Image (cartoon, rainbow, N blue to C red; front, side, top):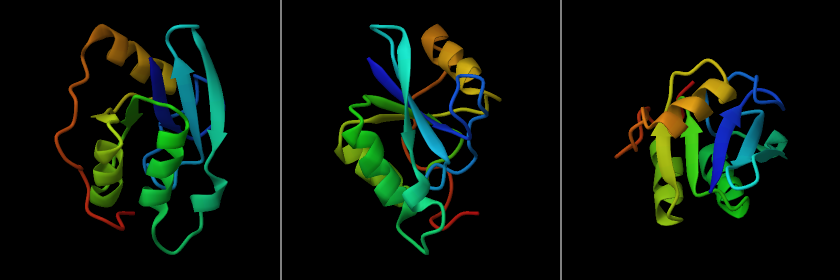
Length: 120
């Protein structure tokens, strides 16, 4: 399974980014081969609007089956859900900690967004 993480850096020790749409990077971890790839999200860092939708499309194109992020807005959540991507909200400090929590089954699938649109 491929799992996307909204991340502030390029390693598993990177912090989970607090904003999904404007996350610096996405780390896409493949559980079958125990390896990850880094997907840049630079195109969304300074856009006026639509960053969540575009980021959701980027995650979908990565082949991820689920997303772990601190927060996810309503438009991004709808795009991810429509693509069949399960969203998990996590307060874990790092990607590695969030990955362990997901593997341990302590993260519950989100049923909706957890912040308003244009959240800062």
